[in-house]
Length: 238
Ligand SMILES: Nc1ncnc2c1ncn2[C@@H]1O[C@H](COP(=O)(O)OP(=O)(O)O)[C@@H](O)[C@H]1O
Ligand SMILES: [Mg+2]
Image (cartoon, rainbow, N blue to C red; front, side):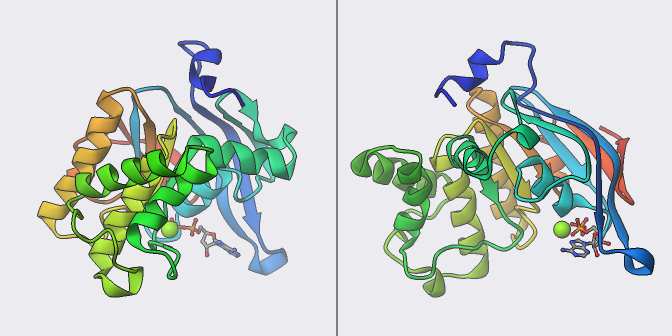
């Protein structure tokens, strides 16, 4: 995947295009239909928000569109590539280079400092160590964590770890950020700070985002909001 993949896909091309996804977990009576004909597009400069009750398929949707999980039917195009046509290694490389994740739980590496955690994504993307640390340092400052760079994840609060994971997603300069309730454990003021990081990044045209959220603070930043109900996507009140 070339570094200028977004341009290569053309101006009107979507960064992410998911069509008619279907994902069933389990079999027989225990089967659970997590995605049921779900289609979704995210274009450059957009933040698309997904709302939905617990169990409606939100996390499954993020996992499937990023290739962390497979779809049983339908297709996902990520930056012009159809995920189903790529090898596991190619999917891994595409994710590492182009996608930033904010998981529902921060999932920082406990043996690394916050700075090292945030710099890691940029390093994996091939950015030089010094430049990666600079980016990480700036990304941490953006989420108000300047001064905590050398702490380990076990030495910060849950909310601080959550913010560090937002910094990690953006520090690698991805084309697309996928976030699963990024402000769920944050107070309002801190949630606004995180929403601002998303807003700034979208506005600069740096990254588009697909964000699962119930937080009005984030929904306010969204270009569109969709509701997910039992694996089906509905146009929201956006
Ligand atoms: N690995 C799994 N194995 C079996 N069922 C799963 C698995 N992951 C999710 N599910 C089921 O799929 C549905 C959607 O789950 P999920 O995408 O996690 O929902 P949400 O993130 O909206 O709470 C739920 O009914 C859930 O129990
Ligand atoms: Mg979930």
